[in-house]
Image (cartoon, rainbow, N blue to C red):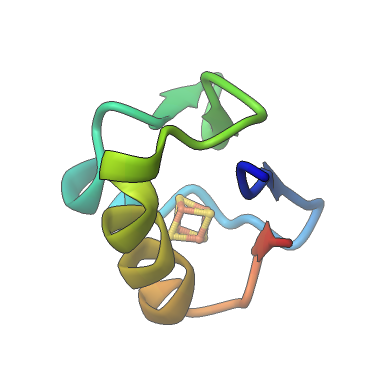
Length: 62
Ligand code: SF4
């Protein structure tokens, strides 16, 4: 089953995730949003990287 991701309220809008995985994350009005909930398999590694690099653990992957 595809993994899912969301950005929670901890996001401080640093933009790191958008740089790491622009296919999934974008900054909107100063905070990051996931453009999709279900992560395509070929983007899973990038999303995991983005989640691990987020300075405030705002990216939840499950
Ligand atoms: Fe927000 Fe984390 Fe992305 Fe920075 S890396 S924009 S804090 S979700």
